[in-house]
Length: 421
Ligand code: GLU
Picture 1: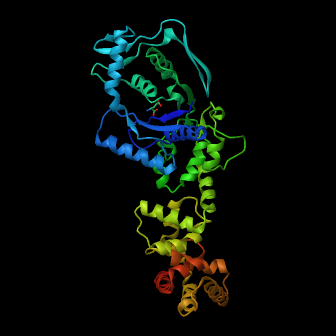
Picture 2: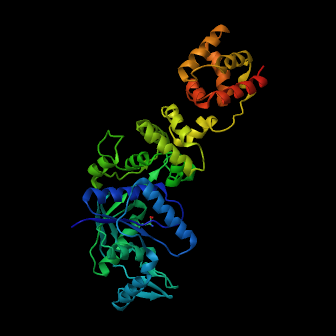
Picture 3: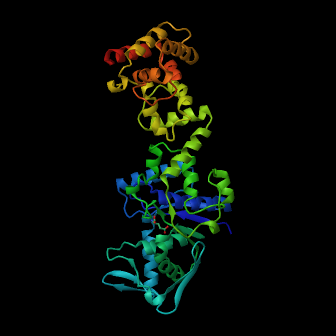
C-alpha cells in the first residue's frame, strides 16, 4: 500500500522552523516511498488572519520546494462530520455528556501502546488516561478528536509529528480504535533546541522560515540544514542535496534525542551553497532577493557586481551593506580618511583621463601613484577605498572603481579630499 502522510500546521502565524523540519521529514518520506504528502490546515475560524497565515505557510513550503499532493484542506470544513461521529459514539455508549460537553470514554484497564518508529515501544497505563473532551459545550470539536478523525478520513498511513504530541497519541489511538478504523503508524520526531539546550525560539534568533528567507539564506541551504536536524544518512555527511535526500531518507535513521540548531553552521553552509552557484544563477538569486526586499536596483549593475561579492558574503542580505555604494551615495567617516588627502589627490590625477577605465589599468595607475608618494599600497589604498565605497571593507577596490565609473569615482574622491586632512 502506498504511504500517505500529512503536515497539519495551525494557522497562527509564520511557519515555525520546527514545523518546517517536520514537514520536510513527511515530504522526504512520501517522496522516497512514492506516496502522498498532504497539507491540512488546523483552523478554528476563517478570519483574515487565518487566510494570511495559510498563504504564508504555503509560500514558505513552496520556497523550500516542498510540494503537497491534492488541495489543502481545512479542519473547520470537517466539524459537522466530527459532530456526527461524536453522536454515534454517544449512541454506542463510547462517549458521554458532561456539563454540555461530550467526553470520550477511555478504557479503564490495561495499557495503550504503540511501536513508535522513532521512539520504539511506548506504553500508557489506561487508568492514567482521562476521558478527553471531544466536543466542547459550544459544539466545537477538540484537537484530540478532530485530528485523529481527519487522519482516518484522509487515509493517513504514517503520522510523523513533533514528539511534544506523544501524550496525545494514546488518546487519539483509542478514538481511532473506537470508530473501527485502522491505526496509522506513528513516528515522533525530536524537538529542535538552541545551543543552550532550550526549545528553539525568538530568543535564539530567527525561528520562522520567512525570516531565514529575508535574511538571505538559500532554500537549498535550509533544506540541507533542516534535514540534518534529527536525521543523518550516516555519521559524516554534511552537504546533501534534494535528490540525494529523497533517495537516502528513512524514518529509521531519525534520532530520538533533541537536535541543536547551530546558527554558525547554517551561515557556513549558506556560504558554501552561495559559492557553488554559477555566476548567472548567483546574480539571479541576488536580484530575486533584492526585489523581494524592496530594493529597486539596476539589474545590469547587480549582475556585474555579483562576481565581486560571491566569494565574500555568506548571506544575500549582506549584499546591500557590501555593495550598496554602487547604487547610492556614500558618507565616508572623516576619521577614516585622516592623512589621506595627498593620496586622494594623486588618485584623482591618475584616474582623471585613464584609458581604458578598467580594473587592471586602474590598479597599475593607482600603484604607480602610491609609489610616487612613497606609500605602501595598503596605506595608500585605504583612503581611496573609504572615499569611493564609504567603508573600510569592500569588494575588490579596482573592480569596484571600474563598476562605479569614472565620473562617480572622481566626484567621490574630490568630495572626500575636501573633508580629509
Ligand atoms: N497543529 C499541530 C502541530 O502543529 C499538529 C499536530 C499533529 O500533527 O497531529 O503541532
